[in-house]
Length: 485
Image (cartoon, rainbow, N blue to C red):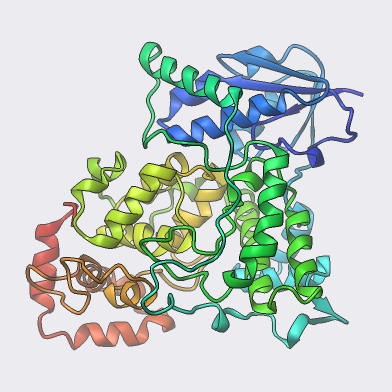
């Protein structure tokens, strides 16, 4: 049996043909020279590689590049980036197998997508539910409805500082983590390799045992509360009831199929409400697979899409995660979460970070690269459609129905950030003007010609024309530019 080359996001047993298959792991320093990754992301990836090297017949090679470490015939599962796939194709005696670590096979997605003018998550999700028989009862969706989003959009409990669900099991670092931290310190000191964000205790699984423990705990203790509050935000509770499993799944430590099975099993056993199970499964079977397939289905140039002609540069403070320079409470807190943990859940990503970047007109490719580097679960395939398409609407609606732009009213309803903030979400002009509220109207005015045909924006655009102080808003926002709010 040929030795299986595992990339650092292919570390679980489902990437092998047999438990005793010999493995090659490569720790490439060139990867960290090319981009300034979050320090905790670099730690997590190296820790996961080195922990995996302790299991079975595994050879770990530390090299400058992948190519110089490949010296024998190998098999490898289809990589998760075009650059890595191109490398594999150029190497002699390396056989590339179909991708693993996702649920729907590429040929099935291509057949589904080829029948449609527009690709939408909801349509793909229903196809995947049927195709894989997930949450189905006799050919119909469990409970009689495909989508329980209406039950999963609750604001945080009034007056609560925390959601009150048990914290996930703590990670206990070991001598491998200690050595990784020493190596990263040395790279930064002696090799000129730079990082963003702060170092800190490892917060996410680096071994399959840790990942399985987190999965079991989430399903038993956190999943029941996940559904209703999956879109809610609390400054004092960044985790809420989210699983925080995306780093482990994206490292390949968990098979998404086993994650889905665990959630559905808990629902079938009567331990988890259907709305919570369905909302979570939608994220894995639906959204995660959807953006993976879009990465390959769309042309390589999709990453450079910029239909709204956004040309602004990321401010230095934002790029360097300088949360202390930001006065808007929501943005300061979320940016600090990225700085301190390399992770915030999907609503702060979309509605605080992405929303602000789109309102300010920052270049979508640069925003996607920032997300890729700054998040512990960020990879090129993850962030391309997520950021370029959904968050920044830079593809003009090829994979989403409208821009995810919102003013301060949304943040006020779905979080506790506006309390104690120096800005007022109801005010759009003046010293107390919420940068999201003013930025929202400025965004609509700036892009009214491109958005006029979108039926989901008909009412907001009608409201735009009724604003008596629109010119004052536009002048204020031109003056604000990219300055930290």
